[in-house]
Length: 246
Image (cartoon, rainbow, N blue to C red; front, side, top):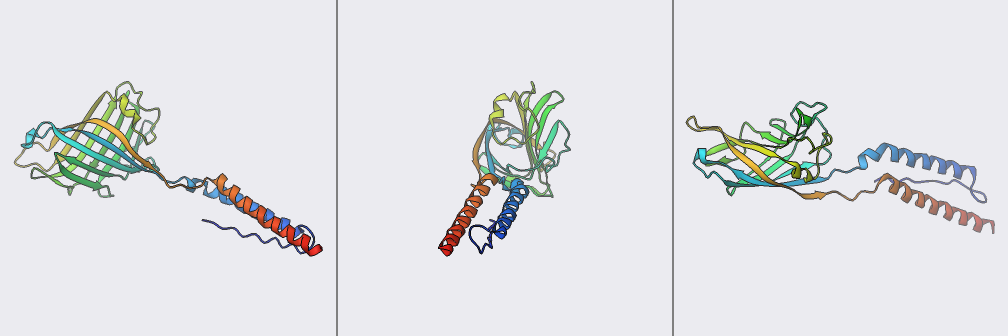
């Protein structure tokens, strides 16, 4: 929070030149403050996407329709290119993010770091389709499932008509899910005795759980508040000068 003090400097009746000079400096300061800090006042929101589906674990001794439930957490102001995918006019990539999910009641969680491969990737009419892709790969693993170390989680939601997105900006709501024609995903792990290294999964539901943002005044609001404060200061000074003349 910035506090601007204004010294009127008037000693005679009414507002002297120094008062107007101080007021001009103050207004210039407020204008500069508003211009410089406007981008910073747009605060980040914490976004949570809920998702659920099933995983086929039959290839490692589990059920072929093991329930999957989880949450994806990310910052609304992630810049394009902050994920690990190569970006283009048709593709964007965002990160870092956190994942918390369970497979058949077994919990997993990971917060991506620079040591991981990760990205929330948006394809807009790339090769004629739209995709929403979530990927995280941690070579060290982030949990165990049926004796295997889980290292890879990803899913791809596709709209073959390329109408799911109009650009490659980061979606903050899951209304795009209604346009999904197909989805594919996988859960990767360290294999045992030459078995397959991944199990296929499908995401059947995606929804927005939370969009929370701190309540921060807009620049115009701050300018209005400070201007009112200046008015009160100058009005008080004017009254004092009038009393002195009496």
